[in-house]
Length: 490
Image (cartoon, rainbow, N blue to C red; front, side, top):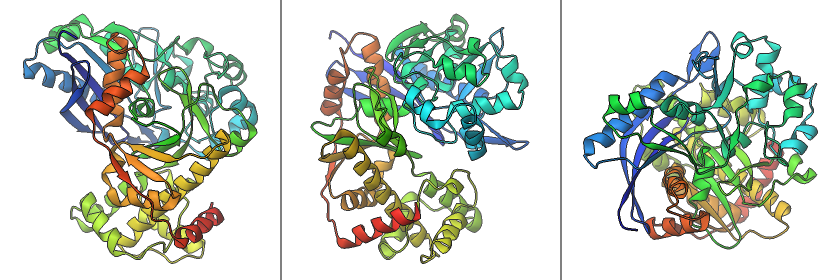
């Protein structure tokens, strides 16, 4: 490679977003955070929304931050976000209201959809496990409510594609994000038109599905002029943040992955969707990989639980408490005292999370966490035990033992949790990179530009660039007893 390439990743999570510069020399990539911003859903009249104008403005701030560096032309940009959420455009390309947040979902939405298309049928067609917030359930609710925005919509764009549209003017659906909707047919790779028609969802609103790591237009001329930048090429990377994070896993051999953040996405890579009855009963989802295959995985409630508890603690005391402070308190608390099911439906919505955890323990006949340390330890240990259940399910699907677990994402900064996971699953745990989604996004742009050939070359760059840590298991009978408790309260 005769020069260095400057790439910009917009990595948006359900609690914050970042603009991260990647400097790529062909063998290694160096990352620099240029801009960080909060991201919180907004409740209006009982409905949860994402503030899209705010998010778009923050992305513009990230582009301005690049310009201020004085590095010349930006070679490419890409966006990754959480899955399932979308926006609707009218026939003039204007937004029909801010996108709804998946936190608005309810179990009733699922039940109503299954009256028309049952879960076994949905799974057989899409390979996606059932979560209350799946796009299919969100859209069917709007059909039932005779939602005016849906009735007047010309185009549905998933969140990263929607933000990309406002940057470039180009409309399409990137493959990995489309798989999260429970509306993409696993056999054809196109929209599941049979389900869409049966549920009364307008067929004309769905855009063409585009393979991952493809170039899709460039920065609009008027935006380029406003920001003082070149017309930056836009790459539809692995737009689902988990897809980008998994692409950046430097693993080898028989390994499972976990992308650890607000959610924990736990799975393996396969060439095709896993549509077996065992996978359906275990609620595994075959979401997409950037190489066009699948990631049979489970969506597990992740650090959302401790994030919400921390919010409660700050609100109650008026004092800040850091993540490190919480870990210290957890270390002081007694081990394996109480176990919750992290995926219990009462934990999906925000607010009063500590009380919800206490109520769960009381209802299941366990000691009730009373302190910050006891509550935090209960959450961390319950997540570690839940990972064990997911690992057993993956081994059944693969028909072989999985030797190690690779964890990426912001959650790996909690070394106490990493060790708990190793102890619980009785396998070696490898952590890194911490910015899994961001580095996968950046190197996905390199693939789109033709600078890297495939995911194998991408992962070699990750190995060249990012350190990893290893945690050896210290398994005890206590973990086995606690695992039985988890099974009882599931």
